[in-house]
Length: 118
Image (tube, rainbow, N blue to C red; front, side, top):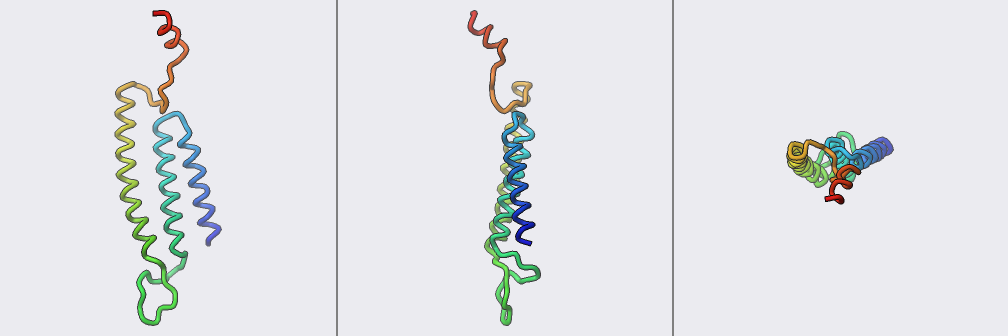
């Protein structure tokens, strides 16, 4: 079980980093979302991976799952949803303002030549 969760975290992180390094806006947003999912799974796995264990201590219970990582993940999901909405709006505004969705603001060789001659 631990190997499966660790592999999922590694795959999500690798895919997120690959997409963050792209030059277009939409893959960068997807990459940031994948990285937040990887962090959420990591936080959730840090609270012990026990199946069927209650999150609250009761009399006679020997094994329990830690409720703190579950609360952290719930908070992180809400924050990442808000962050994704803000980043999508910023990306949409940048696309509508410049008619281009490149992340960097490079100028092409034609624009460099015309700026130097004036």
